[in-house]
Amino acid sequence: MNIKEIQNLIKFVSKSGVEEVKIEREDFKITIKTKQNITKQVLVEDLTSSNIITTQPVVSGQQEIVQETSSTKSSEELENENHIVVKSPIIGTFYRKPSPDKSSFVEVGKTISEGDVLCVIEAMKLFNEIESEFSGKIVKILAEDQSPVEFDQPLFIIDPS
Image 1: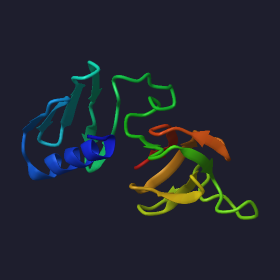
Image 2: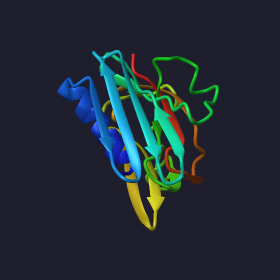
Image 3: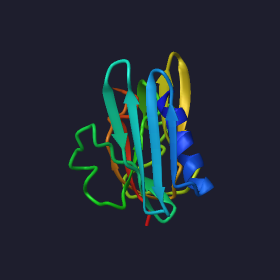
């Protein structure tokens, strides 16, 4: 089960109103617990390599702020609990502009809407537009233009208020 499938499962469980879901297979175990829009906790245990990944999305209204306890958090991510960190969904090259002669998609301080293009990530000669899943204001741009980015690397910090 990959990270996208786990994220989709979390969303499905939170919308369904179920308080706890457990899935056990030969190579992994997942437990998702919810408490009436306060917190959700996910425990993924890879039984083949004994790695444990724990994520605890905190729900504030309708916005989710994902905090991974297994990774170190940078000071930018901890600036404000209400800030949303937009992470790279793929590995590739990060571009702030649609082409070298055009202006950037977003700048710090710009107000964005859900569905606005934040950047482009090139992977295997394909240019993938990364759209915002939230409305708000760009607080910080964490990646440099034309730099390589990893999967799940923080790219932007958005203030949803």
